[in-house]
Structure formats: C-alpha cells, structure tokens
Length: 376
Image (cartoon, rainbow, N blue to C red; front, side, top):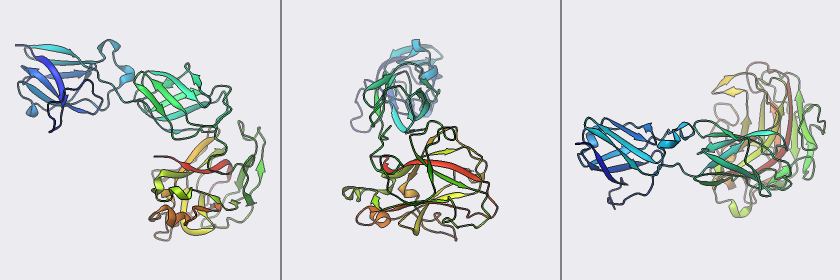
C-alpha cells in the first residue's frame, strides 16, 4: 500500500510524543505514519533529503531536514511540504519547514554614506522584505542575496542621521544587529572629527579625491617599502598613538574577551603586501593584535580595498609572543588581564615588518578607531 503520514514529532527522548507544528533546516524529526519502511525518497519543500533506512520502521522514520536547504531557489509551490516516495506510491504532507529569523553577523562598511552599496553577512537571508536603518528608514528595493542566504547587499538610503542597529526583515521574522551603523560616538577612541584623543604620530587629511566617501578627517599611515625586520614604528608616518580612553566599561570586565573588539575603517588604494599593523595598549608589547589583511590562510598576496571597509579585531586576537613572534601565542586570560582593573588605556597602531622579506609600499587611511561589543 502507498505510504501515509499522520504527524511529525520531535526526535527527543522525553517527551517523545510532542507533535511539531513546524521545523527548520538541520533539525532532526520523526515522521509518523504507515507503510514507511520501504521509503526510497524524501523531499522537504521539494528539496531531496538524505536518510538512513536503518532507523526506519513501517510506522516511523527518523530523518534530518537538510541543513543546506537553498530557500532562495526552491519551487514556491512546494514550500511547507514533506513528500515521501516508496515503491508502492507516495504521499505529500503539509508541514511548515522554515528557517529562523535573519541573523546579522557583520557589515562590510559600518560607516558607509548614502548611495554606497554595502554587504551584510549573516544567515537566513531568504525572502527579504526590507532592511531597516537607524531612524526607522527602510529599504525595500534593490536588495540582493546569495543562494545560501549568508550574504545580502543593499544601498544605503538617504536621510540616515543617527547611529544604531540595523534590522533585516523577511517572512520568517526580524533580525537586529549588535553592530551599530553610522554610530560616531559609542566606544569611539579616535575619529579625527568629533572625538579626538590623538596624542602623536602620523598625519591626517580630509581629501575626498584621495579617499572618496570619507567622513571628514581620517588618519593617514603611509610608508615606503620596509626592509625585513624593520620595527621602527616611530619613524615617519608609521604609527597612531592616543591618550588614555575607556576600552570596556568596568561593569563589563567580567565578560569574555571575544565579546568585544577593536574596530576601525580602512581604505587601501595601492597593493599592500608584507608589512603588518600591530595594535597595542599602553605601549605594552605583552599582548599584540596583528592586522595582516594580505595573508590568506597563511599565503601572502597583494591586498587592496574597494573603498572603505570595516575591520573587526576581537580582543581575543591580542596575544602573547610565541616562538619569537609577537601576537602569535595565547590570548589574555581575561579582560582585566588585558585591560587592567579600570578597563582603559591608550591605543597604538604600529606599522612594522616582522617578516623575512621586504614589504611593498604601504598607503592606507584609517578612521573611527573604537572598542565595541560584538556579541551578547
């Protein structure tokens, strides 16, 4: 006889009879019915799923809904269905299979200007209705996503005058970011405009011809090619050094390092390869974060940006020296170990060449140096 499906229940030992009203990709469920043991194919939302007949019986099947379900390319007429095929027939059962609400992880440029296209990275970017920017300014057109639902592109709308979280809304819910878009004050240590704790070092500029779409003034870190082993960060335009500022509020110092990060925007117009930006606190070399964007899985190559982009350096990236190399060992044991009991200090960007070969010239602009929360 052909198969039948009467319900879908949770794959849990207790309670093991919980009937589900919906499920999502990657979730294990039990399909309950009859004549199921000879199942040859299972489709969820029209998408074929893998299964193991060894955990089937004639009245139940333990299966995992495919975690890689490409919602962006599914046949809309087959959404919210489970189809089971055997040698004796098939059955289509109505059952909602839907992803969670969107999740926003990061953004290509958190300080982009109106008219610029940005990329938002995360999960569950399917069937997008709108993207909401600070001030409740919504964009409903021109939004594109990839098939995996992990990348979304959108153009920054006009009229965003405040800073804050962004939200992505789709038919399954709303995801709101931890990152703060267009926020010129929260956690900001140095931006060369409305917040300046600059002490000494490389110069600044507001030249929009050299670095378009700038937000007023920015710092410039430029150097001709550095010889191997050149640590003379104090020479020329090779460092930014600030006065003491609050990195993490004292009330949050019991949290883990990976919940906070140093962020900044960078613009690299000429190919960069071989020199590193070391980030330190209070001129203390015990813990160093290495910014080396020209390294890709350990392989060196030329690096440039297409305009401004946001850099995220979690505080867990500030590491001890290992095997004679700064910033390659263990991270600090805690926020207080890194930042002290007051959670504050100066911040320093040093351009050095710790490698064994000569670097390229380095021509960069840096803006909006800040320490902010990146996870809850």
